Length: 412
Image 1 (cartoon, helix red, strand yellow):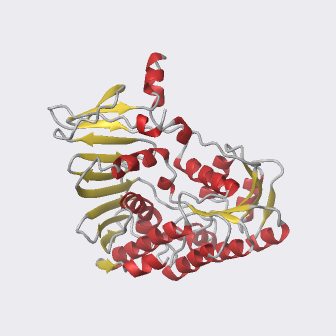
Image 2: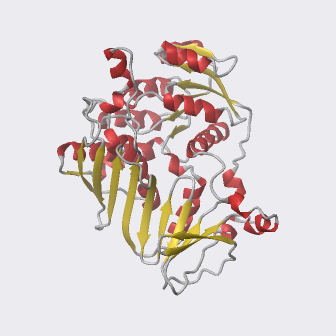
């Protein structure tokens, strides 16, 4: 069955909006990668690095052969995860002693990305770099310029671009299902300290770089840039200005980064995207909304829904559904291969992605590097969203509006 056949929509009832679950094809959910296993090194094996190691272990075409971290306790912990891994205290030592490694994943703190990325590009490695790419515009420009001069694949970690649910939702969006856009909104709410205890003041500072305004892009950059990138990817354009505010509402522990922020990004045509993030409360979690004249798309990383207006035209695709209730609206979950699943009495098993967004981003990278194809998120894509995140953080820190120069983004 082709992808268009799977784009099943629900026409709204006379009573109001209805919700639709967006589920992609089997091929997108379970990507097939051609070629021999790709020899990979992971640089940075803290929390995100460990998550990356876990996901790469589930991709048969990925073979992690070496890990690197300047902290010996983290390095030893990573080496215990699998037999045969080789460990290094610096990326320079790794590159010198492991010339046969084909690809590198960078999962260090954001402010340390630049030199590692430049050295890996110079060494001729395929690369996956976590995002945001860097903590300054100058470092972001340097990484983007080096990636452009490389013949190897440079993929970046704005995961929504590889997420099958988001890809399917984007196909609805590009087909004009929403018609005239009205608003964009996103949030990331999670009650957490964002702090890791350190045994010494020096160790505490190293572990908690997120909380240091001189090294961190705060919630606006480290979190918000990922969700604003969703809007960039769907719209194919970027805002021209962003305003923001932020305060420390709960975690008054010496940090210099706000634990609660509000952003408003303005596009050239007047369309606005609002964004909120907090470490103080978890209500409603993390999602993005794209609202329009005929429907609204809600995306939640493992799930996606479409709420259609009562006057939206009937799509005419076959519907197999579970009914849900979303406050005052009747919700319908629509699932790929629904006919087969319904016949087996397993319809609900098709709801949600079988893997994490991180898995899909890494699988896309392995596939791109193995087959010599462009990645879902290139260095230029990531650099533009990184710059927007950097300027959004500046807006939060200043409490004012910051202009975003289209020429700067175009140059990346």
